[in-house]
Length: 177
Image: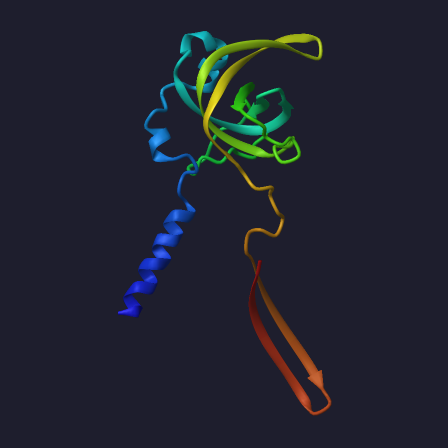
């Protein structure tokens, strides 16, 4: 009996590890036909739509009863994680109700958000006026900072030794985390 339960439990854990970070309930409200380039070009045309976006946090601004986060858009992979690619279609703003600590929602962190399109805001970036699509967050996920050693590393080693009473050899395989 236990021999059957262990593989099933392992499979369920593996399946949950690959699960999307935004709930199915929220995802059922997302308009998947809205691309970021289309939203960027005409945010007002999508007012009221719920979209799923992600990217890298540029800045977090705390106001009286809300927090605004500026995000550099990045494409999302199969589990809704923003990519590491040096490609982006632009920037967007997300408005959250309440306080989100800028020390936690810090520049460089990755964010995935499902939010309702509220329109646009024009703000300066250096010497230009930039049009940001604005979302009001419904659900979000802040990704943990990447750790160089967070994924398993595999190694194979071969050794030969000569001692006082003979010689020897060995082969080893190791996994470190």
